[in-house]
Amino acid sequence: MRFAAVFFTLGLFLLVLGALATFPALMALVQGELALGAEFLGTALLSAFVGGGLVIALGGPRRRSGVREAVLLLLLAWTVLPAFAAIPAYLSGWPGDLAEAYFEAVSALTTTGATQYQEASGAPQAILLWRSLLHWIGGLGGLLAAAAVLTGVTPTALPVQGVIVPHLERDALVARLMPIGIVLAPAYLLLTLLIVILLLITGLSPFDAICLGFSAIATGGTSAGGPDISLFGFAPVEVVVLLAVTLGAISFATHTSALRGNVKAYVRDPEVIALFVVALGALVLLWLLGQAANWPDAFQIISLVTTSGYVHEGAIGALPPALIFTLILLGGSIISTAGGIKMMRLVILWRQSRKELQHLAHPNSVSRAQVQGRNLTADMVEPVWIYFIALTTAITGLALFLSLSMANFEWAAGASVAMLANTGPSLHLAFPDAPGYGEFGAGALIAMSFGMILGRIEILALPILLTGSFWRY
Image (cartoon, rainbow, N blue to C red; front, top):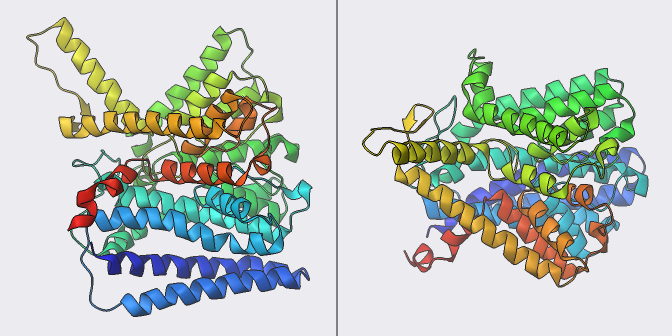
């Protein structure tokens, strides 16, 4: 295990986090909140000091690394960075409890959107801006991790539309992350800028447009006013948010390919097709159940299937909890900011199942299943089944633990699914009477934080860390 490569890269991440903390620090100072501004500046300096120390101490010749180092970095990044990001919230009292502050930071960086406060509660604008910035950088980190690490954890990487994502070879972590970032980050930046401009055109203030735009493209599910998007009071904002979360849930490899002139990449991407088929199927199901599928329902369904979790007041209590949790579990694309199972896994299972059924009907026939022009092999299908087993185990285990501190097991199961699918607002959309996240004890908050991290690393990285051979060589 080459720990130096892991902590060197973690130091770079801390430097980025420290640089981001200067923006809410400046806002707080400009608004006359000197104590809050000093707390953000202190966080920036501490992050820079620790990160810079790691980079200086562990720099030098390029350090070779492989799957083990990448997986460890993934877990450390989602665990350690929130601890630094929680410092301003803890010191300022928004929230003042250590477990609550850490929960809030994990929720923001994993783009889960499970929050305890909003503008109506009196939270300072600098805190709300910080949460949106954490959403945005967490969304970027999530899609880069998926491209650089998670697609290479299994023996055969999942097919990806538009750009080639190489396997994880024995190479420096930074050397692998940098070229992938150069390929995918421009699309993320351009789409973020587009959404913020469109929100400004709808009449939102610059502050609201930035907070909402940064969170929406990362499928974070919050704004300066909370997850209920109907609070803004007019449809153009809802349309832009719907566009943003849809773009965030589509593979950024596909976006990159489209920006390079291959616009047909969208209609050729099976994950895009699956995303819209699922959304349309959910609307048809509501109609079959005797419910008129109106705009709030359509907004809510797309919000859920993209795992953003934005809530429309007109849909609260209208959707069955089973449908809500099914949609958030399905999730968006592999290399996207969305959570959930991911559409590519569903596409693989669908096409493999169709092949097996055809073989049962015609035993002597020769058939094959393909995705993105690649034949499906056992190395591609077996990890998908392993993922489903791991996900089921994680949902059950977390639900049982949370049930110890919740009066209703349905609430515990709903919270477990919401955390692992990184869609925090879905709990109270399904169960409006469930207690707010600020009402849970420290043990439940830490457990839910762990669930959010598991959801973001797509669970499979944890069993790899727990194997004895992982640390042996």
